[in-house]
Amino acid sequence: MRETSLEEASLILKLLSDKTRLSMVGLLSKNDCCVCEFVEIFKMSQPAISQHLRKLKDAGLVTERRSGQWIIYSLNHQNVFYPLVRDVLNHIPDQGEKLVWLEKQGLRISCD
Amino acid sequence: MRETSLEEASLILKLLSDKTRLSMVGLLSKNDCCVCEFVEIFKMSQPAISQHLRKLKDAGLVTERRSGQWIIYSLNHQNVFYPLVRDVLNHIPDQGEKLVWLEKQGLRISCD
DNA sequence: TTATTATATAAGTAAATTCTTATATATGGA
DNA sequence: TCCATATATAAGAATTTACTTATATAATAA
Image 1: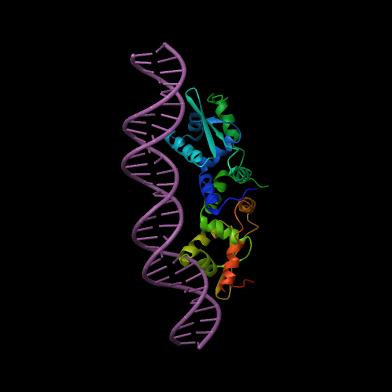
Image 2: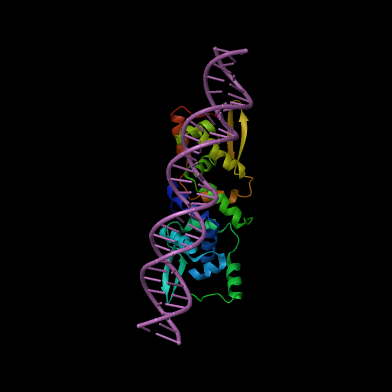
């Protein structure tokens, strides 16, 4: 396992220490998501969601791709910090239920 | 493994996301330490150190005991969040070298 | 007892964080 | 082309955080 410096580790932990971002990362570990899905799930303004995603992207924890009008976010398993992220996610409840709820509302965007 | 709620997990991660506290916890996983040792290691004011320790103590991550004039802090392995802490510590460099340095300076307090 | 050492706490300050609102850009459909 | 939808970004406000200095408490040593 690659050893992360203390500075790097605390930076990643700071990103994951926000409830919304931690849940986002948990969701992305299950399924890719677009911004508008996060807006529905977290009942938060679109700019607030975009700003959280930008922080995750700047750290390399997630990647984005365009699909039509949507920007689809994915968890970046290739990132050097992914092992830390994975270990942290092991300690939180499965966020997949939020996607089930989204689907029930008919708000799921199929991300392919 | 006990499943920590999202709120609880983010609270613990917030505590660990501070460089000083993360290093403190890493040190305590090796050896018990007193406040004055932390002051030397982190070259930080005594109140600043005490305030960090208080946050860790309030969350139950560390315990304290008095030994003469010193207050000795220990990592609380019994805490429900300890498994998360342990997994996080697995991703940071060994903080034990800071104790070696302290010993070389003749500043180590034998904690028993 | 008095002084010294170790620690905690309180109050204030500067910086960082997370929202908000307003606005810009890009895509797709009528 | 024009409009609606999805997203990003910028600027500002409220809150939180991590320090500072000043002071209080407890133990030990002279």
